[in-house]
Picture (tube, rainbow, N blue to C red):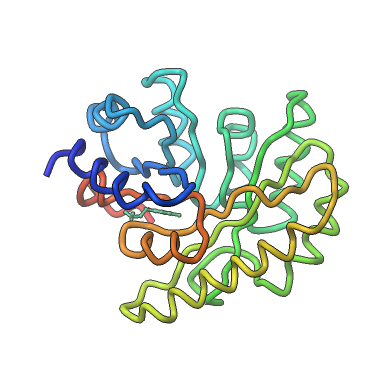
Length: 223
Ligand SMILES: *Cc1c(COP(=O)(O)O)cnc(C)c1O
């Protein structure tokens, strides 16, 4: 299977949904990303700031880059303003830093809140019951725009557990959609990866983040 075949197969799975394909290119080289670009993809996701910045330099300027991995404080200044969407806001501290940097740049940075629905100790993200308080603080920050929620499902064979995580987040997303703050809108629900994107779509995801199914096995372990 070529990258083109892989993309076609995913696009076929997406055709009955109003959802965006985010190609996760972490660890993969420029040539492979160009191949995906030539198939029409314009949204690419990376989990490491350094790698992302390097790739921005080398690739076409009309690519929308997404940061999907944990953002460390000392990397905030490097990334704000360079990406269309930060999917991985997992603390008020980091959101505040992103806001300050965006203010300095005179821009508004779009972000998603990463939610640890499954409450696994190894995962980043806030708990569902923390979202309300989080939003209460975030609503006062003028240089960020919260555009939705993101989650990573547990790595398990238990499809019903995965489905239940996605369903819980969709329910929260719908509830938050009733809020009306200038800088908070529930537009994007980023859930689903290679092994679980079909379940995520059934449960209401509108951004699927897919790496291995497009590019093959990762070139190295970078988690
Ligand atoms: C690596 C990664 C993906 C893509 O994973 P695949 O299983 O290769 O599709 C999606 N989301 C996040 C946050 C990731 O780190």
